[in-house]
Length: 250
View (cartoon, rainbow, N blue to C red):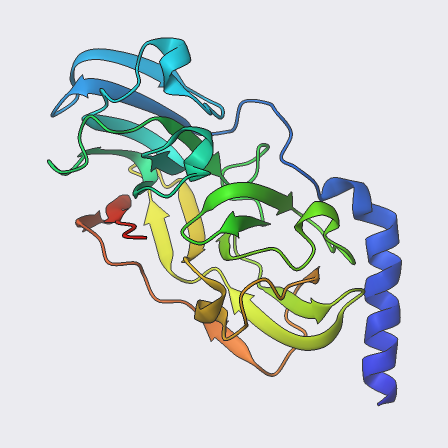
């Protein structure tokens, strides 16, 4: 038991030194972008976004998006405020990746946001979401977090970016059941060699954990239970990106 005790002490010390880095994501433009179009095949009117948009009506672009060209990980929600109410989620990730929204999801997007670090496209980071399929409130981090504040035992889905694994614990301060998770679902490569590594997990069951059970997070792999996720079912996938639709029926 001594090695585990030493590990917990080390993680607590690291968390105390860097706790301020884990929080609601800073409200600054991210390293990526999305250009959304009112027509298919990147045609007609367009708007460029670098940051979160909780209500596209503020830009006169509610329920009009039919295609997009983007860099980074972006989610497009049927409802305002990132699907606080149930709705479909269209996801797209990649490097200068373009695609058409499916016909049954064109003209319905009401909010959008990116996932990952606001500082570097392939920086190591985790984002826990209050709802399944990357919906609702979020808790973003780039270092150890011994507690999750407002997201304590309230996370239902997860996005990882970068190359580092992360360990998720069911107790505060790195206690309880632990699962080591790798950002292994996708590896996007741009034409100029730009990389984007990520892991998309639509529910905690993808990690083998109960819903709303995560209470602390450590950067690195500190569990014998290791999860390497599978790519989500995509409508299209290429070397520089992929896109898909998650329909919500409740």
